[in-house]
Length: 239
Length: 196
Image (cartoon, rainbow over all chains, first blue to last red; front, side, top):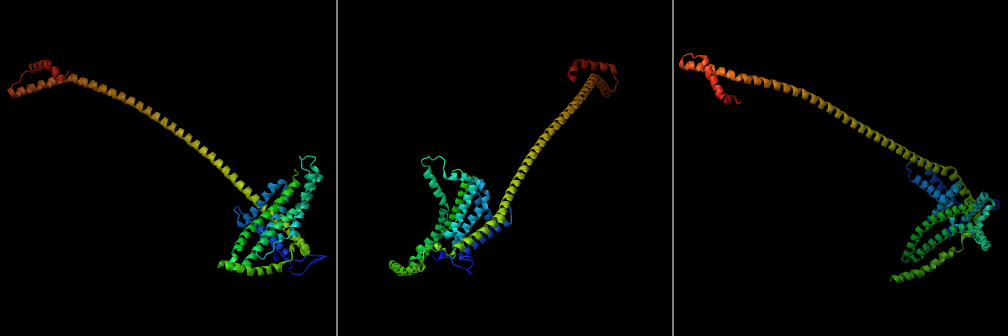
């Protein structure tokens, strides 16, 4: 599991009791962010009627995320477009950079995905209470449920609402980790079976790489779209 | 034989594999809280920078670019539509003008033809009259000529007869007797000679 290990790059930095040293995880966060900024900066620099490739890429991803948000959360979610766009791109780039051999996958760490998910959870809850006041609690009381079942349903709803950050973070983290571990295992088989039997796991490894690239995109998409759905709950309360 | 080699490599490599995995045992590094604070700090920092730069600088530009393109294309489409409409109107106008001028030309042609026909008719009438007049004159002349013809012929006959007789006989014969013979002949055969 060396690929998931975090180690310090450069000196140890401490603020009070907290160790905030620059690590390989930090390095790939910085690389991902920089890559996003460079690509989208290049893509937005020139505005020609017939866009070049990088402009087309940035504009397509803009409209992709924009459509995703308007489809799931409606027009009220427009102010949160930048956040969801950044989130989707950040997760996507972290996942994709993880697919390059000898790199570090930022999103394969539960703490990273959990902080993202917790921030989304808290943000969505705050938005919900600002928009609807205590009426937001109606989210836990679905309409059209018999009164006898109501206490049970409310408890279930509250539990499902509170487990959102956990499910959101664990989904991404587990997918990334499982994929990379599986590739590592098949890679290990290639080594252990040698030149005779290693071809089968090697071909599996190749296929898995394709699958993992798909998963990397899909998980970023799922992460973003679930954020949109939670936002939709907070903005348009109709449970 | 391949089976043997395969099995052999499996068995020998099994120990290596065990060694490889043994070296890495130590649980999931994800659950080691040593660098959690660092990861949180750097995540907040990088994501914060990413979010603020994207939302303040880059995304508005992309959105503006998209809007601009949309509006430009819309404008172009509208302009093209307008031009098409105007060209259609002009084409209509043009067709109308052509139609009008065609009718006009037809009218002019008709008028001219009628005029010419009238002229021709009037001239024809005049000419006909003239021809009629001349024919009448000619008929009168012919009539007079015809009426005077027998007398002249008689005279010629008388003169030639006297001349012939003079030459034949050598004596001059009274004109009156010859003319009497001629008159007699004319009376007898006049119809044969003049075709009445």
